Image (cartoon, rainbow, N blue to C red; front, side, top):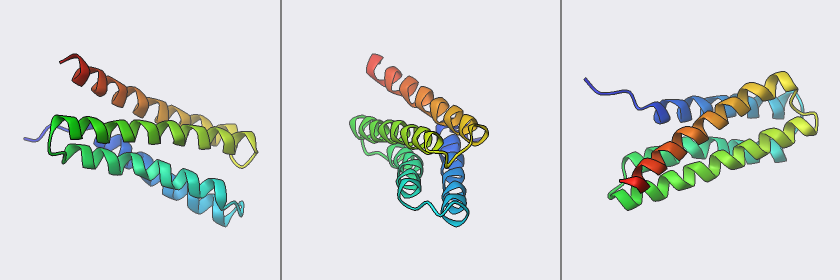
Amino acid sequence: MKKENVIQKKSYSFAVKMVKLYQHLSNEKREFVLSKQLLRSGTSIGANVEEAIGGQSRKDFYAKLSIAYKEARESNYWIRLLNDTNYLSNEETIPLLRDSEEILKIIGSIQKTIRDS
């Protein structure tokens, strides 16, 4: 039985939320620039996790995971900016920030494990 890959699952779930949020922001709030940036960074996390899993070496795995970490940081930035410019309410923002912070902690932990081994 294959073990569940937590970061793969969480980053995919986050990407789905980013697509739905982009749809909401562009259709309801008529905001296209910031939301597009968030869409790109938020979906890139999972794409880079997938690339890391398929990496050809430990170094390749680490490099792709590092990109995923940077994309998660960027997503966190766009979420905060959308909140501070009143495109997202606090009620919408808090769970998204919680999700991105959790992803950052998981990726950071994986990176630390790789560095320390």
